[in-house]
Length: 365
Image (tube, rainbow, N blue to C red; front, side, top):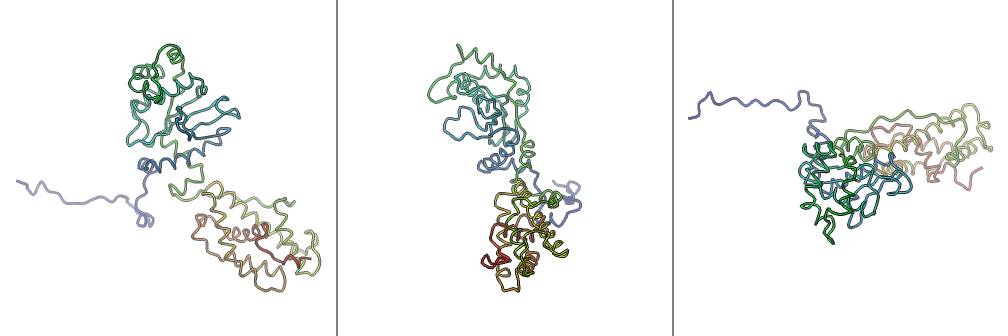
């Protein structure tokens, strides 16, 4: 019989003591490691491709093997221009529904030993196992004990390697292959944790889209150099044309401007450099094409204003950058870091690419 004393009131504790508006909108954030653990095979494949791009700063070149019969090579980081022959590291990426165990890796170790013995390539400097569910305790201990790993590989060769290294031959661990095996450096085998992958992935411009969490702060914008850079030549020429159109006299240098217009010229250059800074920030923090879409939004937001009638080119430029400042960019991932100067500076980027004109080419002084 169930007694009243066996029953207790239901009083669940809140998941978060002080929930924010974001919690109410999107729920409790899922830890990044847990997200990776839940990836489907295709999501894991995409994630590892993104993560691999973070290795490019550490190697001369990084490539992923995509042919049939991989010979144990998955992601290769090359030390120099000589490729495999110049020294390399291997990253073997696996998607499993459980942590990686020794039985999952014997054949991979066997491939590296066999194909390096066959001189298909020299042994890698390091060989990392990378798994969506990390590695299990037993495998972790083995990877820290090279001699024990060698012994266990020998013991499991017949069951896991002999018929599975290649479909075209039986690879017995004997003769010269056994000598190669005995001299093989098993200390090259190691692993990368999911957390290490996430930390590397955070250095890529894919991270904010895949895991959220917003964008990192923008660095301070560097003021324009005193001397004009070659990359500024076209939009500066357009500015001089606008000033010429206003003054009805040729302007070919800043020295031809009044103090007021010199200050205006400096402001326009500062806006351009703001936009260039945002372009560089976007390159490192959001997917390719994000900044291009922002530029296109600004172009379509100002083009009708720019192509209206004005007394002179300077009035046209002023009206265009004023319109740009009022454009909402809320649909673009960069919106949380976009400043007014960026939107105005994009107008000068567009002028630099001859997508906007302050004075029709036929009317330039």
